[in-house]
Amino acid sequence: MNKVVIVPKTKIGLSRADIQHHLLNVHGPLAMAHEEVGGRFDGYAHAYAIDGASDSVSGAPLLDCDALSLVRIASKQVAFATLDNDAYRNHVQPDEDNFGDREGTRILFADATEWGPPAKSGDTKVILFRRAERTPPATALAEWRTRLERLVSRYPSVSYCHNAIEQGEEPAAWDAIDEVVVPSGGLPQDFSAQLSEAAIEVFGTDAVAAMVTRYQLFK
Image 1 (tube, rainbow, N blue to C red):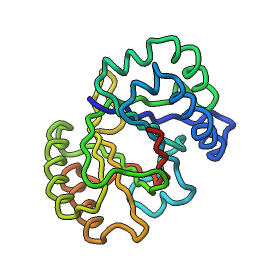
Image 2: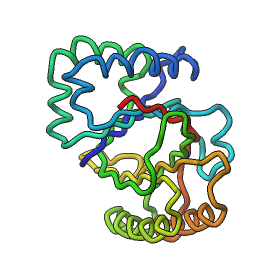
Image 3: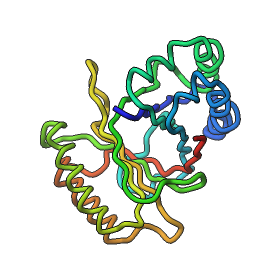
């Protein structure tokens, strides 16, 4: 495990613009201002959903969610230590209630594998949520990583991150969450078609949900 993917359910009464403004201008800087929180992160970013854009990609729009938090971290022990300190309890955690519904928010541990150039602030990122429907998740994820390795190696300019979701006592809604940067000229057409075809072969379906987002890197 080297990543935490946080899928907040937007607090009732807030618009998409409201939560994104709060995350960008309040919560992100707040987490980074405390060494015992942001200082423990190896990487920290948000992905803000773009209005209407998700209709253009495979997978249903993800409801009740207008942004993701993506935290790179050394281990699960570091994650727990980040949550178990006064800086988090007294400053960062209380702010989470200002934008999210705690009951509906999903916090997922993942093993992340990255290919290609690193994503930058301002990049457009498509987030693809995948679920195994034909084979056991562990089998599907092993095959998917192999397929991605072969596919992305043929397109070295493509920036891709595969997050294999760790399943706990209560199974997560997805087995994988993938992130792919869309350059200004668009992804290579062959790449997109091959990615979709491979996903159907491995998972039994293409992405079950998708978000087109604007990437914001804090660390």
